[in-house]
Image (cartoon, rainbow over all chains, first blue to last red; front, top):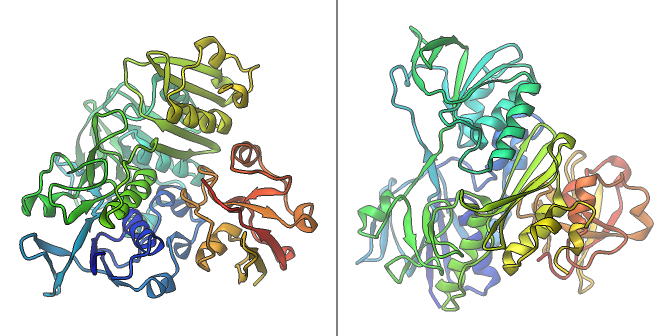
Length: 403
Length: 106
């Protein structure tokens, strides 16, 4: 059994690894290094209840402080790893220390993708990834303020929903012809566009941001050839994986650290889990997932592999988004060529879109429809074939769908 | 602060204080109560914080939302007093609440 485990990154995957290492019987030492000032915390509420102000900071933390003491985990915060020496099996820290490892877990997550258009560095332009980002946004995020949101994905739309609820004047600019195009199908995009419009959010689809205007701080957004006055800007145009350390140490990376189905990198002593990885998903296609589920499950599999009991990772990915009183729950990975089946009526604000490939259920997007989501997830895991007419028939309860 | 007692499948009891306004799940996680996975962190999206409320308490708790009801319908080994502990917001009236932790959340 390894004596010395080092985890780079103190987020969802890192903390799951600590918990699983102890649960699986590791007796050796664990060190976890994080570059933020805070111990591991939940990111999903940041763009939802934490921004809204109904969820205090202390509730974000994934574990109480004594968890780390009791787990014998040396938690080093506010510190970066500057290099991995795979030959010597050590990591170098910004504080000058060098830590030896038997097994290393890279759980470095992602960072926001930044805009580089003219004026992109003006004060008043915000990104949203960590606690400090939201705290920095809070002062200007006040009723009556005009906010321009760049990007109609999960982050942008969750902030739009919170903004509308808080009484801000919200405008969203999206380059694609529909919202959340990377994550959901057309009917779900259309439904959310209507919901945001109903809440007073102004949506500009097919509209790229060309630049920002302002003398000492942001005053306007230039998009689609027009300047829109604004008081603040939130940019949510995706994230990029933190794979630099791995790359510099010679590990194969391709928009993410390449790992196998046991979360192993090309180096038998180095593992990686969470948003920073690119792996062969359960469909055998290279994929990089940005979600809590992947952080938790991949970390569990990394731990098993570290302890010499590898078990292939094939869990169905799942995601959720809260906007207004709508809960969007997604399981599986859809492709544009899948056949889609609508179940329920979007007008009733409760429906689901199933995706089938060769008759097999491969993904479900459910809006305020937990049975569709939960049964759908199980059908996906089982590789079940369900007749399209049956799936679409709301008189057949989801519970009976698998029978 | 209201006290909530968690009983493990092996009978082990743990009584923890939970701030008013927090969820029973958050209190359990904060006090390292085993068996409450709460993967989604309380978004009512994963059904891994399932508990059995002591029958004497079941009627005293606020009713389930449609979403909680639906999620519970598909949790493991559901009982009449099953709840998702992330949806149980602690009030001062809940001092003394007793819940049982299931054998597994998955």
